[in-house]
Image 1 (cartoon, rainbow, N blue to C red):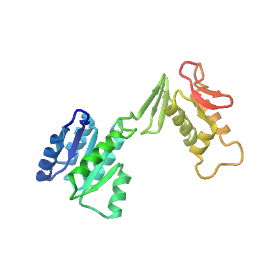
Image 2 (tube, rainbow, N blue to C red):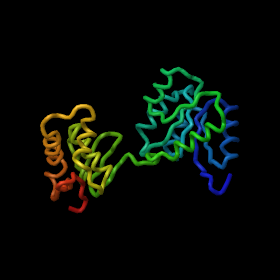
Image 3 (cartoon, rainbow, N blue to C red):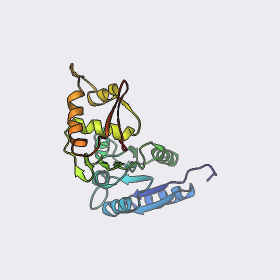
Image 4 (cartoon, rainbow, N blue to C red):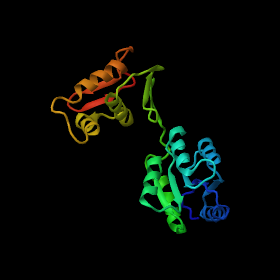
Length: 231
């Protein structure tokens, strides 16, 4: 491995012993740290207890299959862990099921070693890798997995669109989000004729700001909106 090469922590969840050996040799030869599991439950436990940079996941596993592992990992992990589905199933329906379960990429067996390595590296470089599902801005906590928000430990009862606004502002924090950007985000296909944000911003303020001592949602006149932790 060259000095500029990237060393990844890769978890392989594969029940075929000979293929695990091949992958062990391949990954370690290229300077990567590899962990292995031969069944779905063990693999899920390893992924949650020691989150890897990439998971290589077979679909046809004993106990719980790869689709279930993928879905449970998405539901339980506190960050995004890239998942490369590695399987002999090659129909479009199989691939769509994999992506629906939360897979990031899909590689059919048999595969070229160089392609597998390249895909793992590409997945590890994506911007959302390792991103926490929980956003924290002062006393505001947003769980992106559960689509829920709390301020000072108090649950914020938000409808879908006010929550979408809050999430967009939290993801952009401390930057200002333009009004037009929020409208495009919430109504990507058809924008209402009247002021589409007014009522949803009002509902957001009623939950986010009204019960507390100071407002977090700030209007930046002529620009848009932002969250203010220290207001």
